[in-house]
Image (cartoon, rainbow, N blue to C red; front, side, top):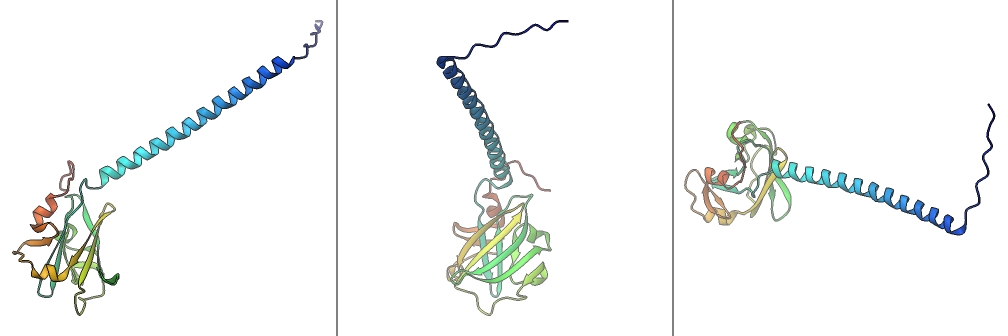
Length: 195
């Protein structure tokens, strides 16, 4: 078989060279735009996913924290959804930002459900220091961490709490005296149910 010779291509003119350069630029712009769009779509998808995971894992409204003082006994009630459990409670001297006491993993079910006796080391897997402070600070900053990974915090003026008339089974809050059920009822827990 005999090879047929292909005649050489004629040289491109300036107009044709310009057109080819424009087409290459257009192609580059289209590919870049598609790549950037794909990255933006991925970032938006990840952002929406993170937003919805956060929204559905945290209560829809801020939790309320109550406190009662009976002599040397200090009890805190932290509002929480039925499926949540207390992981840790920390008590800080609100005026000096110094840790006064900490209790990890309450042992009793009522503690895990947010009814927390402060200074009672036997009620927790671990606590430090072992007992109550010699004198309560003027303000207590109480932080309660819950599973799954959210927490509530409140600063209490001890003189104001001591002046309040708090009936048995109730707690002083910044919104007035409330029962444990009222404190838990403030949260918007969606359709959660007890475990």
